[in-house]
Length: 143
Image (cartoon, rainbow, N blue to C red):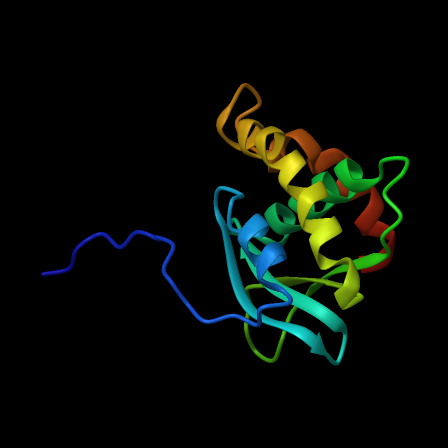
C-alpha cells in the first residue's frame, strides 16, 4: 500500500558560514534547500528548488530579486536558474561573497512574510503574482 508523501524540514549538517542564508531560505513556504557551501566555486552559495515548474522557481527568483533591490543594501549576489544533466526539474542557486551572508540573510528574512503571504494569500501564490514579469524577462533569453 502506498501512502501520501509530504515534505518536512529536517536537521542536517551545514557549513557554519552559510547557515544564516540556508535558515532564511528554509522559511519560505515550499522552498527546499540542497547543496550549500560557505566558500566554494561560486563563493558562498545555496542551491534550492521551489514549486513544480521552472516558471514557479523563476517567479520566486523574480520576487526575491525585486524585494532585495532596496536602496542601502550594498551586497552583491547572483541568482541563477539551471538544469543539470538529464534532470527535468530545474534548481536555483544564490551565490555571494561569504562575508555578506549574514547581511543578505537578514534582508531576505524581512521579505519572507510577503513571499509566504503571496503564496498562501489573496493572489494564490508567488507564481501567479509575478508570472507576467518573469515571462516577459525570460522569453527573449529562451528563444
